[in-house]
Amino acid sequence: MASFFKNYLKALGPHTRILVMLLVLAIIFIVFDFISQGTFITPRNLFNLAVQSTVVAIMATGMVLVIVTRHIDLSVGSILGFTGMVTAFLQTEIFFTDNEWGWIASIICGLVVGILIGMWNGYWIAYKAIPSFVVTLGGLLIFRGATFTLSEGETISSLHPNFMMLGGGLSGSIGPFWSWVVAIFMIALIFYSMMANRHRRKKVSFITKSWMIEIITFVFLSVLIIGFVMLMNAYKRPDNDLGHGIPVPVLILMIVALAISFMATKTKLGRYIFAIGGNPEAAALSGINVKKVTVIIFALMGALCAIASVVATARLGSATNAAGELAELKVIAAAVIGGTSLAGGVGTVFGAIVGAVIMQSLESGMSLLDVAPNIQKMVIGMVLILAVWIDMIYLKNKR
Image (cartoon, rainbow, N blue to C red; front, side, top):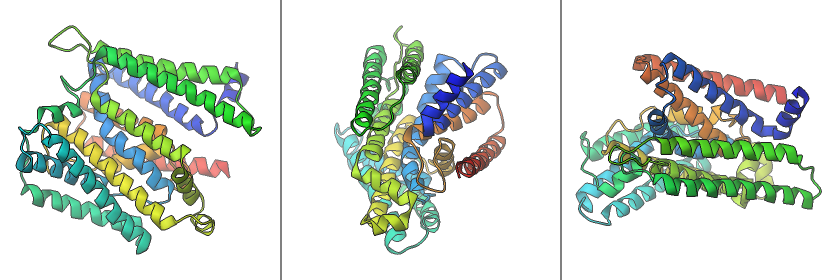
């Protein structure tokens, strides 16, 4: 049995770290549930945890690509706050809340603003050779100030009801039936991906995993998906006896994760990104336009911040000047905890999502236990240090 488990971990390769993170997450759940006397692992709390994790997780999928290319983005929290304020301002002051399509137009405009900000960051980094740390630190201050200037220090509320659904809540979920449809689709997608990958490896005479390992992995992931949907359906709506189902923010995260993962693993741009992270000089000599790719990555990061701002603003029902504060810390920590190496060249989207859930689980668990906010910040900061330390040990052992 021990030999099989060892061979299984070896076969997982780079995904071993994600499995370890899932085990850590399970331990966190059990410990907090024990200390809170059974109030942590409940459908209601886990539903809220899923919704709360999405904002950081959406941005963490983009931060993976930024860190993979040996850069950093400290402005993500401020971009989230600014694009959220732009969306809310346009929705209430320009398109007006009672306009049926105004909320959609405001989201599109916020997305465009996020992309332009990302391109602005990428331009200074790629074409002016200013370190990403400096550029994005400046962006953190610039766009935080711009948020306050746009709103004149006030909170913008009274947003469109359809927009509010994107943040989760009472009407912000897809119900039990469609949740099972999504679950079946995800399980089928996993099966197709595994079989397609196996076929590709056989075609080029690469070694394939044993069928037993493939089956165990497939069953494990399927059980996770089914268990998640069961929990979401177990949280009953107050107006009827039906379950909430998968929250809309989680559905948005799924779409983002699938799109970013596909881009990173199946497209030419994705191969360029990891090639740059592995060796920027060699990538440039091989004909890759490193500067152009860098701008694209930061533009994508800006777009993801805008998407995350929609979820955050819709969940709160208003755009506040404090939105996104310290989000950069959580996003970077989520990516690093999920296995993204600060040395570049290594990272996975799914790992970043697991990292985001771990970060939010710690915060939610401490809030449930009435831990003071200052202590929570200390714990999160320590987790970030430990994550980087573990990354350093991992890299050292690989050499």
